[in-house]
Amino acid sequence: MEIISSRRNYNVRVVRELIKSADYRRRQDMFAVEGDHLCRELADCGGCSAIGYFLYTEKAAEKYPETVRLAQEKANFSAVITEELSEYISDTKTPQGLFAAAERFGAEIPENARKLVLLDGVSDPGNVGTIIRAAEAFGFDGVIFVNACADRFSPKTLRASMGSVFRMPSLVARVENLGERLHGQGFEIYAAMLDKNAMRLGEVRFPEKTAVVIGSEGAGVSQEVAEICDKKLYIPIKGAESLNAAVAAGVILWEISDKN
Image (cartoon, rainbow, N blue to C red):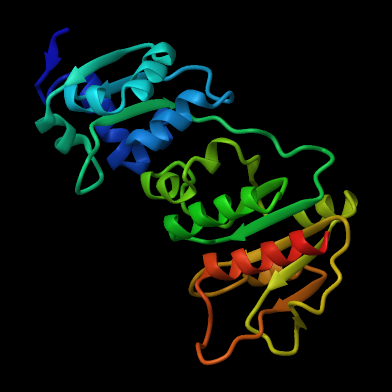
């Protein structure tokens, strides 16, 4: 098979731009992943109907033959690239030589959902990916994004989620009417806040249908989202002033899952 070596190659340019540019991902309605784990997750994912582009090096084919086989079977286009191009495309310091691109996709939040997490302006892609991963691990039914959260299909979010983005039902929503919709479906909405007058986590009996809000790293829960919440939650901590958004979410999501 001919090995692609030119940076001007159309397929190389597309995959690289999808990894490097959020604006390009939005305009193309596509995303790209790299590395053995995420390429295999994408190839195995039932929600992804096809991989548009799959690029890999000869070394990667030798080291990860099963991932290459699975991705090739699902890809509309696949090709071998040089190690130099792998470094040119990659968003990591030590690329594994595997890249896959596909159209954005996602599962709808089920009508019988019981546990939801709502991210309110969480801007760090690592936090967003970690929270999505925790939501899947603790049996949540969906993640709702409001107020310009980090792109769930950015390379950093995808890496942090370890593939959970491909399976976790999600919804990008506006705050308007969101409270009415959730309350109409029987949800009680809790806001995680740095407020010692709030209900202490560990002492709350969560209802069957619970939605919890995780606010932005700097400002916390926005005023407009706080207004649709029924109650406030506080994580009792010692020493540190506060917790990272993803850490706080993990603690709360585990507590909710353990109480339901």
